[in-house]
Amino acid sequence: MSSLFPALTGGPAERPALCFGERSLTYAGLAGAAGALAARLPRGGRVAVWATPVLETAVAVVAVLQAGAAAVPLNPKSGEKELGHILADSAPELVLAAPGDELPPPLRGVARVDVDVLGAGPAAPAPDADAEDPALIVYTSGTTGPPKGAVIPRRALATTLDALADAWRWTGDDVLVHGLPLFHVHGLVLGVLGPLRRGGSVRHLGRFSPQGVARELNDGATMLFGVPTMYHRIAQALPDDPELAKALGGARLLVSGSAALPVHDHERIAAATGRRVIERYGMTETLMNTSVRADGEPRAGTVGVPLPGVELRLVEEDGSVIASRDGETVGEIQVRGPNLFTGYLNRPDATAAAFTADGWFRTGDMAVRDPDGYVRIVGRKATDLIKSGGYKIGAGEIENALLEHPGVREAAVTGEPDPDLGERIVAWVVPADPQSPPGAEELADHVARRLAPHKRPRVVHHLAALPRNDMGKIMKRSLSRD
Image (cartoon, rainbow, N blue to C red; front, side, top):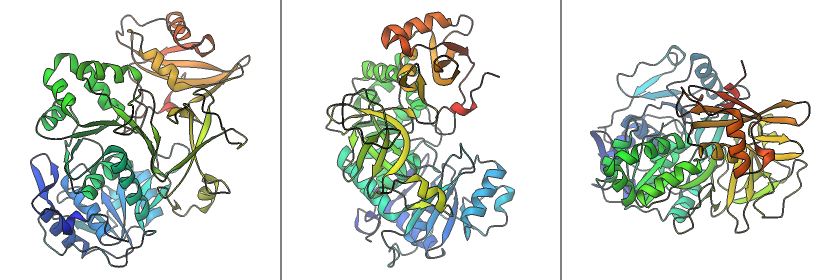
């Protein structure tokens, strides 16, 4: 297939491509550094990348793709057991890292190549690269067992990034700012490879801060990608930071993903800046499936409509397709299209179980569809769908209702067995004032007034903080009554 990054050979050579703090590369510099490194890499092999949020990581991944190999991004925060599993499963021939990085023991048996961001070499992509060749092997979080390696082909990268360009009117004139990790689809594929495919620029903050966002947006950046934790911190900072409000108000596009952005934070940001955050929906295995379009209605609590080329349907537990778009009927999302992965590495059993007989991928996410096709995620099938008193209830809408209470700073909702109801709704709340937390009855009444009596929490636990992963997602399996 054609190059994933045509701007490396055919774009403005001196246009900024990558900026990480004080360190940056133009397209000419990136082409030279990636070309020199690509010449040292195995064609068609697997190459691990120690994915710290630095310039070397971006250069390394581009070089691997230019060489026609598959990159295996490694989370620097992974424990040795998890890292050992990933290395044994993916069997990379090399590991790429920034000079001076100390790698943990599991990696010391893998041949290491340090990334030279000042290198110079030809930028031409591998001539034998095929659309179905693996581009990335990204490991899932492993909440129900050891992490699985999702094999993402070059075709899926190109399809997703081009579909987002259509939905977001994304061009080479855009300058993206973000502070996301680079071992994950959001930060790496959308946040680094996306701007490079468009011929635009990315500015990585290294470490996220509202002040860093304001600085970059006020200095010419046009787009911000973040996760709900980041936007929550932005919403909290806005009342005392007029420069931040000005910066966000001037951005062309504010995008949130990786988890649902609470409606309360949507509204606080819109009120302070006049701009609305749009959401999109994707997974490691599918890359991006839906998004609110740049020219569409930025409706809080929705993830928009299917992207070009993506088919999406909702199904009942028995597999029957839900035809109605009433905004109420909950079903599992299944998707089909060129954005999908090819399978789990070394796991034909898991791959077969992930797809229906006619090729639809079972996402495990539950949603409803509005009459105009907008999708609203209500949660994960395994942790966020609560069956109580004969109702199917999504945890997300209860969490949003709880966050509207002035005494609630953070909230998560789960279900637990109940002999009468089947499951009862349990709220895990971080109070705004730990010395005076809202009571269970007060919160139950608050939810019942906003939603319906059967959606009120029956049990409330107060916590100092909710357990979250590196992408800011709440780890509900870590919540327990003990």
